[in-house]
Length: 122
Image 1: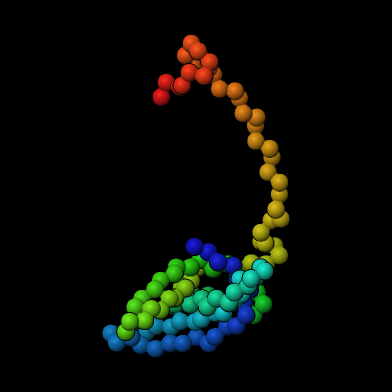
Image 2 (image 1 turned 90 degrees about the vertical axis):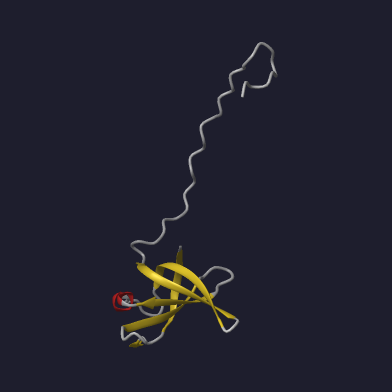
């Protein structure tokens, strides 16, 4: 799944060690979807994806995300995790809408059977 956002806020990288001793780091980015009913979305990046992220506030970015929810103490928590991202600028912006060519005219169907209106043989 992808989501395009305009970066609103970059939260600092958080890091630590898990209970098994492995190092971890994450970064949360707040962005706006745009459009008439714009929504704020918090995207979480884990591990080396954090290091590669170099966008700044105001940039448009397309995030490839995975949405997951989990229950803890009878409450549900949802996270939008980015596993890949692409900068969206004027050079790779979506092309303007174009009008598709008209479809080819539909050929009349061939009559089956001896009588007009007889059902097709399938």
